[in-house]
Structures are given as C-alpha cells and as structure tokens.
Image (cartoon, rainbow, N blue to C red):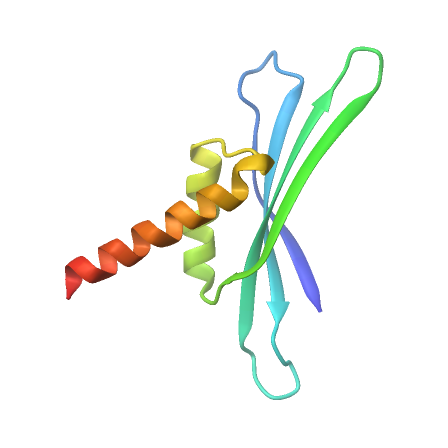
Length: 107
C-alpha cells in the first residue's frame, strides 16, 4: 500500500497566491515477506486566482530512494531551493550525480 506524506509546504512570500507542496511517497516492496520500503517524491504547485479559479501543476517520481533519511534530505533540499514540478527530473538527476561524486571522494 502506498502512502503519501506532506513533508513541507512553501509559500514564496506572504502576498503570494502560489504555494508548493513537497510530498514523500512510501511504497512497501512486499509487506508479506519483509518491511523493505522504497520512497518517491511528488511536488505540487498550486496557484489560486482572484476570481476563484486555480491551476495545479504536479510531478512525481517513484522508487528513487531506499532509505527514509535519503528521501527526507532530498525533499528538504528541494523545498529549500524551491524546485518546481517541471524541474523535478533534472533536480533528481543532479542530486544523484552529486551523491555519486561524494561517494567517489570517500574512496
């Protein structure tokens, strides 16, 4: 069963009618045999208009991380840098490559 946890909501400024929510998506690999989980991320940007309408832009990537600490760090950084849904794939690729570079330096 998949669960979705709102990790952080970012409003650029108090007067803004736009806000961005950052979610952690948790999926169990096989609850019958083990407690192993994998984690994904969803970013939802909502813009509310004066006339009562709104637009919602959303992007999700599943099964990117296998440790909760890793996905938490990723989502925290994405929120801090105010990553938009359209940039999620590029940001994820950059984050993973930076992690690989850090791992190589430790060797």
